[in-house]
Length: 588
Picture 1 (cartoon, rainbow, N blue to C red):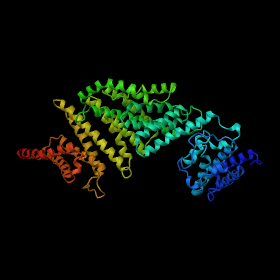
Picture 2: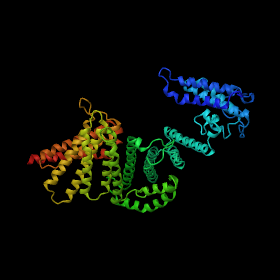
Picture 3: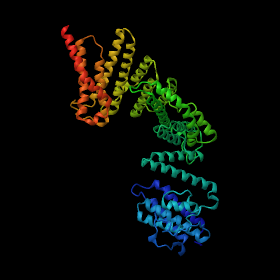
């Protein structure tokens, strides 16, 4: 190499890199590896110009080497040896060339040859593999991308990286390593560890200012869903608040290697991610309210005042423990960023709402994000997403009604649910959206069912309900029956025959629909004894279906234990009641 200018060697190496990375995109379809082969030829030339490694550097038998061989097999020293002197420098430069030749052969699907070159790379580096200059190349030859760029070996002195830039690159690779660990644990369904590494990744990205706002924000919002499922609402709120703040930086920060796109260049992606973050907020509000409902309801789903009082007494303890311990563990950012995130957090409660006013605050926040999500997820183009957002909106009204003590206002909330859900049944083709249609039909039926129960309770408080109230109750009853029947009819086969065996995925809803249809027929108000007898007979028929089905399929009984017991009672009582009606009709 003494007769060849070093600049020429570097130039050939850079040309090889260009062929591998840039010219690759221009290869003809019939010669996809053309530039790779040209790059290989140049790398072989550089290798020849560098000259052979010294015998001392290449003395290990090949059988003991390999890309997965252990330190002992490679004869690695325990202490750090720096590659000093011309012999060591040539060995490291040859290792770089062997590495690129190995990658080149692997890229062209010549795996055996690629492995041989990588083994040579490892062997050449065995003495210096713990040194600051070589550890990255050694890691790359075994498992992946290096924290330090080995191409520096062929850069002029003035173009080489500073220590600060090298350190920055190393930190970046470590962050990537945490990110990949999060993915691995996610695929292994080890969700606790996946969340831990995901959180660590996000935190480091902020610390090193190496993130793209849109991508970071959506990852933080996605992490919030893990905490929501674990009922860790403080952590979920922190992730979502951080997502809002960082997402707000889109288009306001300078583009870097890690932030290549500005908002103006990706308007559709921007609005989509904004909608997705909004949906994460909806889930936060909804789950927090539903968890409060589960904690305070009695065995018939109404507010239990004793449980409400117990939860009030526990609130101070929750505040003391969670603010002092858990908040430190999940904090993103420092300084102004931390303050900005805290400002968003302070506007949102992470505690379970204990009364209507607290629940209403969460409801209004959730509804705000419903409108924001629907701006992007419109029914024309995003049918499933749009429907899920509307269903969440309906669920927010449903759980808010639990906290409302005024029955008329509760009725209005259920009416709002029906108003937003019924148009969906018109727009959807049941052939293509069968499962979604079933969900909506069942939910609408249940809303009418709840409204009817409320109207009956209001009528019971009156001494003499007028005909308008009676008509209203019967109309609600009729509407509930209509949608329950639509749901049950969707289970029939093409010959309109109801299945003898109901699938597990729809077993409980089907049994509940049968039970409520039976109850609804028994609730129809009529002055005609003959009509009332017909309604009782229909009611009995549905109760008997539940009892008979559970006798034939014992596993179904576990799905509807309470409803089954009530059905058995009604099967026993209704025949007697019907017989009394017949006797009364005969006498009149």
